[in-house]
Amino acid sequence: MACPGSYSVQKILRFKKWGRFLLPLVLYLFLVLILCEFLIYYIVVLPCKWPEVTPTAGGRHEQAHPSVLKAMFLSDTHLLGNIRGHWWDKLRREWQMEQAFQSALWLFQPNVVFILGDVFDEGKWSSSMAWAKDVSRFQNMFRHPQHTELIAVTGNHDIGFHYDFVLVNSMTLEGDDCSMCKSAEAKLSELSLILNCSRKINPRDANTECNNVERVPASAPILLQHYPLYRRSDSECTGEDSATQEEKNVQFKEKYDVVSQEASQKLIWWFQPRLILSGHTHSACEVLHNGTIPEISVPSFSWRNRNNPSFIMAAITPTNASLSKCFLPRENTVIDIYCIASFLLGFLMLARLKLLSLPFYFVRIFASKLKPT
Figure: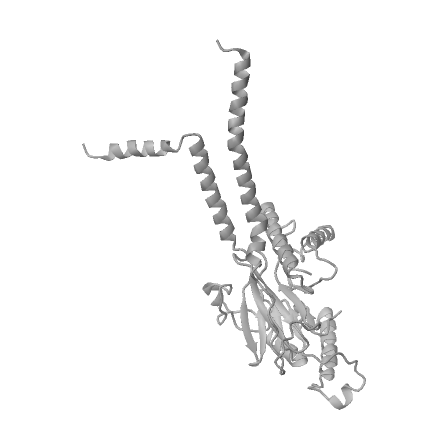
């Protein structure tokens, strides 16, 4: 008969034995979690770099010049509200976007961040109280230091100017004479006159209209809006983050998928921009308007809309703009890491419990029964 003291010693030894096994497992799980939910965003984004501005006529790079503006462009975050989407989907996507944004912000320190519309998914349905909660969540997710400015363009799911940028509310370009549309069109027309007179480019009567117009630094503007300018479809778009072939075969609907032809021509005629950036389609595309004006469609920043979100990094001067794209971690990569980690964990558990040979034992029995007698 074993004495009580020896039984207690055996129990302590057994506990320590399991403790030595479980502690590394807990540490292993913790490291996998840190990798997939935190470090992976820094690892994937780290190779991205600010583009160099095209050299000037003198051959010097403008990258180090104090007038170079470092801007990040992202689009279609679609923060879910109380109406649509599952709570887990909402929690997961917001965590992903917050970690991706904060890692990019910390690594690259942009001067300004533009979100090209559809910040929220349910803005047009939300109550005042729900809207206030959504805005509070957005401000927490996309928090930023004082030296970085964040500007959001209005998108169809949502409802000061810098002299280099013109921000357009695409939803006011319906051409149906609504009060909001009339007001926006009048302001855009007025702004176009100021910009064109400052650049000494005026398609109207320059002799009379420019006499008493306020002047700003003469710089071709960059047009930022949610809807793309008119194009028939995404059939000509290329790249790994362009639309699927099925989506490319769908013709765009004016005033729903893209700005109408009439409004698109007006915007180009009014502002003669050097560059246009837009969102809405959730996929990447690059087109040329009038053969000279590039438009970049920025893909969605949310894993809810695509497996490989991205954002644009731009180095901008009053005369030049250089862009580069930075991809975020693919969601299937994170899932693969979790699956591999789970398999290894199961393997270690079976080995520790000395059950690793058990499946092979049953396989041998099953195989022996299949042999012909």
